[in-house]
Length: 281
Image (cartoon, rainbow, N blue to C red):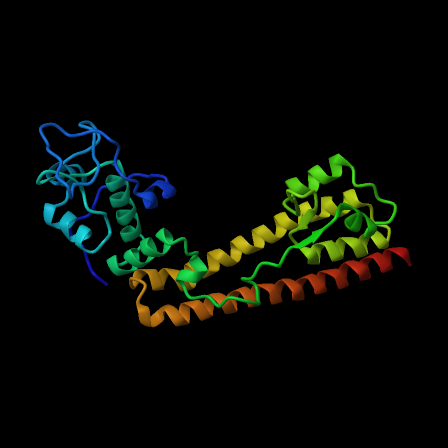
């Protein structure tokens, strides 16, 4: 891991801004000409020279040049022979500092920034497999309203009901008036519960409760991953030779989480059923 003695002073900034790095606004710093290769430019108040930027972040100019050489910050907007750095350069520097504080090496930071700029997700950056398993979303199912209603005999798809399932992110309405079911598996479960006589409102109420429970379970396993697996990986600077093992561990942890939930739910159901029968005896 590369160690830095020149630490940047940090403060919280918005992640989306850190990664965007748009071109500077169309105005000019004082007494600066524009040649054919110069970038578009900068306001007097918001855009500064590299010396001023180094002073603001309390690091040597050489550190900033090294960051620029490594692609961690973009080149400055040039006016003649003078380069100017704007608010987004400062925001990117704060992000670099934040990631350093979290144990990332410069090489790891560069890989993350490049991946995010290209729109890659975290699982893609970590090399998680695509297709199957806990990391893959269900393919949605698109139905005509009449086809959806046919799955729930006697149920009227009222505006209030449709509004609720949309708000719960269970379905989306398409431009052509059809319904996109985001979890066909939950639809199948709901259909079977309704066939047993459970009212649709109660099915949705239980979904809300169970989703909150599973969100809490997911947060617990995320904490386990961060504490016991990710922290040492990040502290080592995201070494390339450990990416395979951390990826495998993350995939296995997801599978184990599902397995534990299934096992404990089965035990809980058995216990609750036995208690109910004992009460009826």
